[in-house]
Length: 220
Image (cartoon, rainbow, N blue to C red; front, top):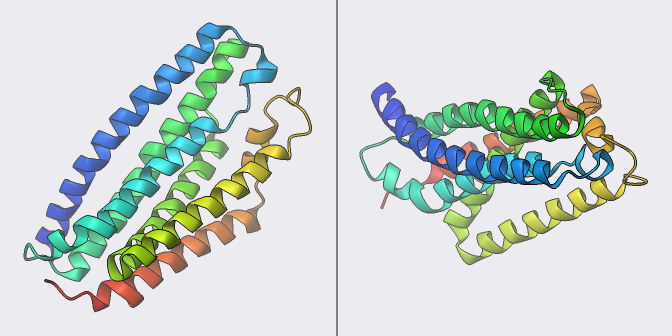
């Protein structure tokens, strides 16, 4: 099992690295572009767009891997346990990589506005937590799509619509654009029970993926 887990993890980490490099190039270019616009702090600071990109890319990657490529992995002499273990290793690596990416690019915008750059550990932790949550949800939704086909894809679309609506409500909570860093402050000020709830949901999604789908897969 160990060798299969390592082989699966290496391949998935390769895909993750490619996605990370492309995402980094895109959002760094966007941050530099916004910085060169010379916008005021009320228009640039505290925007969660880069955090959203850092969360959504791992979500789509994990969904795609589980919905489309899992059968190929299980059909190449891999066990269900090795494939599942590799998914969890990659999930932790993605949380660190994309959490760092989202935090650094967000702080880079602040640097363009104020001339000061500081790494926010709280923002990194919250971003990494949401990456774990998104990938766990991607595993579950990908498994539903793998099992039920179009119905699962529809469920995934509804999930994305629901999350998008929640994000819209979250952004609309800012009373005015003059509240510098309001949205980022809301993220870093997420209470302990809120972080714990997100983590427990991620664990529940992972457990459902294993007990309801992974253990039941029939290799074709």
